[in-house]
Length: 271
Image 1 (tube, rainbow, N blue to C red):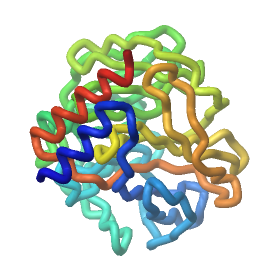
Image 2 (cartoon, rainbow, N blue to C red):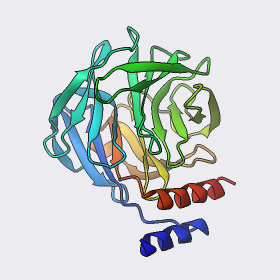
Image 3 (cartoon, one colour):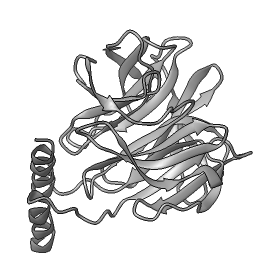
């Protein structure tokens, strides 16, 4: 524990902590879809297995033991379940209920402070909604509309302090989101003309927000979003992979004391 706290002490004065997260991404351009896995710090097209479902919303629980996903069958999300990170097999927990007709599931994110599952949906630009999901029954409960007249929020992610963020591909902007009211606040332009499915998640080892940004026709980047400016910092070019990816990062939430230190570090970083 002393070594862990020492590492986060270094972070408090501005140095970065080496990332320990493992990315799991579903490539929706493959036939069939494939599950990729690579360390956050070493992006690579490492194919683990085939995945028999389409999914645009997935996340790990806070312990990092289970990868949850929402199955999509056009034109609606249909079930809530888990993806085996070794075999790619999808196990249905329950039908997904409570979501309005024609709403596409765009993001799934687990709050590390409360273990609450949040779901974002969209029908079209300006019609984004926020739900919670019961991970045992698959019942979605409406929270609020996500504010904005032109935004199309394609994914959500919740950081170690409990703050939610959303990626808008209509205006190519990163937003912060109030989980209770759905009110969104623009942070800044991402710098990418993103289109179609996207992935986004936090690595709790370093507190950074990472994303698989798809820009169409097989082109894309693996990036880190700057939480102060919204800009995407390119870590790898995924164009050679021909990949359009939904993703989640497997990294257990730190112990409460360590998590609190990381939260303080992120707040200091944003000043």
